[in-house]
Amino acid sequence: MHVHAQTLSKHVITFVDKSGSPYTIGNPKAYLSARALQRRRNRGIAIDISDLPVSPRYPDSLRAVPGVNILYTSKWFNQAVIQLTNTTALQRVRAFGFVLSTAAIAARRASAQEIVPVKWNVREATIDYGAGQHQIEIHEGQYLHDKGFTGEGMLVAVLDAGFPGVNTAGPFQHLFESGRIKGTRDFVAGGANVYTASMHGTHVLSTIAARSAAMTGTAPNASYVLIRSEEDGKEQPIEENNWIAGVEYADSIGADVISSSLGYTTFDNPAFNHSYWDLTGDMLEISRAADMAAAKGILVVSSAGNEGNSSWVYITPPADADSVLTVGAVDASGRPATFSGYGPAADGVIKPDVVGMGVAARLIGPNGELTAGSGTSFSTPIVAGLVTCLWQAFPQRTNMEIINVVRASSSRFHNPDDQMGYGIPNFRLAYDSLYRSAQQDTVFIRNVLNEALLKVAPNPFYSQLYIYYHSLSNADLHLRLIDNNGKTIAQRKLAVAAATYGHFLWQESMFSGLPAGIYYLQLVQDNKKSVAKLVKL
Image 1 (tube, one colour):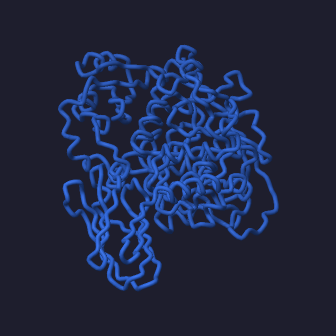
Image 2 (tube, rainbow, N blue to C red; image 1 turned 90 degrees about the horizontal axis):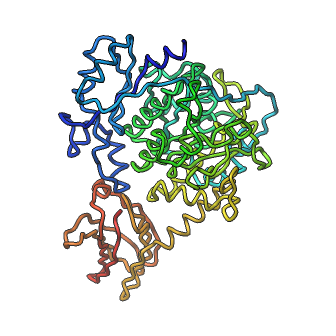
Image 3 (spheres, rainbow, N blue to C red; image 1 turned 60 degrees about the vertical axis):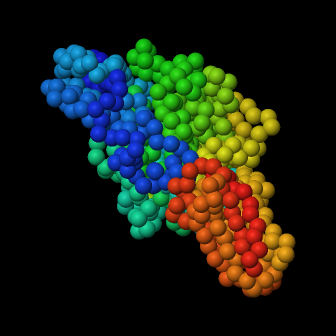
């Protein structure tokens, strides 16, 4: 009876369209943050109907029905998630002409995570990784950090079951002191207080964001959005809908990366179970939402799940989504964890993509204490943080380009398997590969008469150009960016001295808003001109 009551109380209502909405594609500032719009411009992603919020008149009509409480809406799937206090209310909801379908929500079995308090001696390190040293160095993540890439300027959304102690424990205080918690949202209880409920999210966040003498995470200087979508204990499948709503929120606030240590498989009512054959990447709504986030330019990192030694065995959705970086687990020696979920996805896509340290991973608890835990829940944010640092180093690359180079840098890239995927990522190799590629993408401009040499990277470009010059003349260098119609878009003058080398970052506010296409960079020095073609993405 308890399960039946849960099934009746919450439903997903899908609407037929978005007609009558005050929102338009032409005015996205009304429903997307400036950062979210900037990400779309940088990646050449158009605003479309999926970005439009649900037409307000539909939820307003549902809200007028006695016994209906609207929890939240999903713009990507044009839905509302409602809670009912009586069964007759559902009949009235179904009678509305704008309602396409209704679906009940059933209860789901919990998937256990192992958290083990431990004590150990923390060695001193040049970079203060503390207890987190090995789970960073197994990926050569220190190579990124030594180059100054620690997540600065990147926004990471973490979806989990709660973050108690994050607002009070010492290893997280640097996030608040520097204003790097950019948003919080609780899709379980409502509101913005996420510093309650399960400590699982605190442990997860610590592997990526903590910074203290005891332990430092993989992206300690990134900014964060904390989202509670998982209801600890009850484990209802409405959490899949909560997850979708959380990802939409992450998109709207402008997140660059999503780290999710959540997955969904079987339910107490077998009629609602997922099967292995559902794991095609586009069969389940939660997996389609993960791919939708990727299509919006977000790099989604999802755990493979801990079902490797259970009756389920396989990865857990949304880990089957093909545009998601799915992370399994290994121990400190690089051996696969027995609990790590197996692939491939049902459509044959290699999953997991990569693996990280998920056996006895070092964590920080709600009181700031060191502890350890095992699960793909922890290997996932460890890898997500390093992916964030890598993307910080090469912001002109797309999310899928970053995922592809992470796969290609991994230990089993040439012989992937069903448990480790492409293997353990090596972020030294990933960085060096992208750096070499950037050098190859450099445009050289040579003024033959006076031997002024400029290197311009990257090409194609998004919102900024790196200009490297070698001048043998004292004359000023004049740069003009010109569109395909001969119109000057931007210009810059450089005062140079003979026999000097130099460089600068050319970044104009209008660059990110330029339409994709062909542009020309003109160099003028001593009244001599040279031109090179650039591609804007």
